[in-house]
Image (cartoon, rainbow, N blue to C red):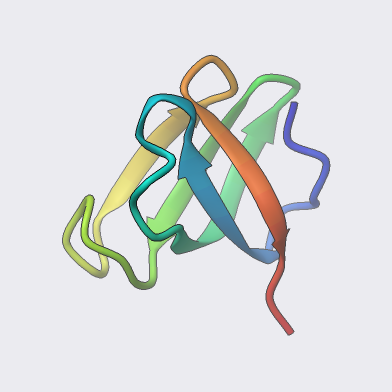
Length: 65
C-alpha cells in the first residue's frame, strides 16, 4: 500500500530486485494499491517518464524532503 499523498516525492524499490538502488518518483495520482508517478531519478525508467506502479511489485521506502 502506498501511504503518501498526491504531490509527494518518494523513494520506491522493487520487491524482487532489492539489490538495485531505489528510484525517486513524484506521485501524480493514486488508488489504494496503485500510484501513477513521474520518474525523477533512477535506472529503471527514463527521467520524466510517467508510469503506473503497483503495490504487488513496488514498495515505498520514504518521503524525500
